Length: 348
Image 1 (cartoon, helix red, strand yellow):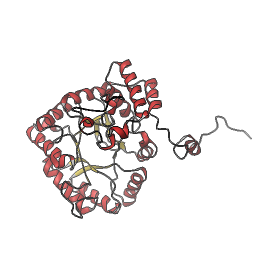
Image 2 (cartoon, helix red, strand yellow):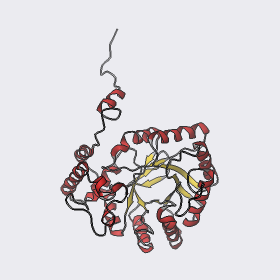
Image 3 (cartoon, one colour):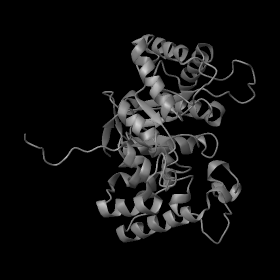
Image 4 (cartoon, helix red, strand yellow):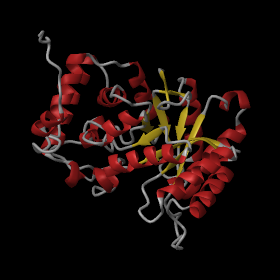
C-alpha cells in the first residue's frame, strides 16, 4: 500500500480508502468488521463513512468495531464522515443543510454513533444554496477549535463552489478544506473539465467515489444481456446514476472493451485496471473502495500493486475521452487558454 498526504495537510493516508456505504445495508455487521480488519491488515488506514449511510447504521457498526478492538489495532485509522443531508423520516426545516444548527447536531450525533471524541476528516456532503458559506466556515472552524474534527473537506462541490470556499476561508482567516470527494472514474471524466483544475490549484486532495462506475468497470455487465441476479443492477436495473439504460451507451461499452483488453494483457482483473487508472490521476489522495464482501474487497485491494505503463494509460485515456464540445472545454477552448513562451529569444 502506498501512502499520500490529504491534500496539503500533513496527514498521511493510504492510496486506497475503505468506503462503508454498504455497511448495514448490503453488508451485515460481521462482514463489515471483517472488511475493516482486512483493510488494516493490508496497510489501509483511511475509512470513509457518512451519517446517512444506512441511516446511521454504518457509523454505528464502525463504532462497535472500534469498541471491540484494542487501541493499538485501531490507532492507525484516519476516520472520515460527512454531514449535510436529512436522516430518514426527518423532514423538519432544519433537518438538513450546512447551517450551524444542523451541522452541530449532525456532527455530535455522528460522534455518538462512532463512539469517538473526534473524527480526523469531516466533510460537508454537498453544497447548500440556502446557507451563507461564511456561516458554514465559522462552524467548521469552531469544530476544529473544540477538538471535534482535525480537518474538513468537501464532497460533490463544483469547481466554482470549491474555489469560493477556499478563498473565503483565506479571507476569514479560518482553516480551509483539505480534500474534495467527487465522482471520478473512466466513465465520469467530466470532473476533469473544471473540478480537478480547481482542486489542483487550491492544493486539495481528491477522494474519488464510484471509481468502478457503479460496478460497470468490473466487467460484470454485458452489452447483449440485461443485468439479473445478485448484483446491484440485477436487483434494480434503474438504480441511480449507474442505471443500465442510462449508462449502457456506446461510449461505456467502448471503455469497458479497452479496460478488458489491458486487464487480459496484464493478467489482472478489470477492476484492478480501473482502480489503478484513477488512483494515478493528478491530485488523487485516496480512491474510495466500496465492497459488499471481503472477497470483493480483496480483489480491489490488489489494485494497490498495479501501476499502468504510459502506453496503457494513454489507451484508456483515449477510449474514455468524453469529447467535449469545442468551447469551452474542447480543443478550441483549451487552445484559447494556453500560452507558451518562444523557444529562443531575440537580441537587439
